[in-house]
Image (cartoon, rainbow, N blue to C red; front, top):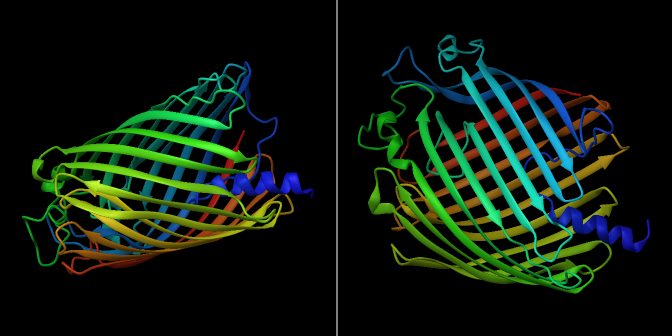
Length: 412
């Protein structure tokens, strides 16, 4: 592979997300013709064993214990790709039936439920000096970006975002103002009391008080970058978040980020990211240095290894803000045009405002994915999560979780 192609591949891997499976395979000419785009219906069938599936008691209002269970996911959905000359659109949406099979615990069938997600992105006038990007990410899942929320909680999340990239001349200079509005609401999978001993005044333990965590977050941001070499750029960025909670005005957050950094290639096989900044939360007068350092090594034209460190300050319910020190590593290999292998590991040390609570989190995610034909992909994997906090013994936020899964995806 020539040096120019290797640099392009490495830059693409550098900008790829560092968590979650990235579909390395292509659908080709499958799908329904939609003018200049294509519509791809699909269905996932996934079987999981989750060692910490939920708190399954004999009935609502009773104290359940954290136990494992077999879970079946049937997830129909579609993906729309519309790369037209004047606009680039993409939409991915699915509906997920989460069925607790009751094989390990007969009380587990009660919280079976529906989940779903939809992601929309659009770019207008990409080749012009002024571009307009608009998108929305919606999900209703058993997951959240807020670490104070533990097991047994459903999260309704919606983020609408827009930006106006301005890249005059040849595009070496880019200035991008933007903003977003995020809504997140929480509800228990069932109404079981999930703390032992019961703590009715703690929102983590009392499902009725979960509404205290519901929030609206409004963010404005501005970023500028200058590509002074073909594959190397310096950037400055800033953002301001205003977050308000539905029933908890004392922990509303006013959070500012500012920083600068460099992203680019050291050699044809090695890329680096180095960023440094400051985050300040004004309501609680909490500030800290922020940083991101990453080394990315291109093993081949389709495989890479990365290792990095991230320090950040983020808003969170109940405490206002928390600082996160994360170390992470990832391996990605795409072999023979069909087989994808991936392993990701991270350690997070969290410190919350007020200095009374600190958490530790360990995450491991690994497994293969194989494309038999254009329309059939099989995957298997294992995820490990460890969480520990110093302020409570509740299994809601202190647990070790092992999940194994197999999945088949049929795509037209």
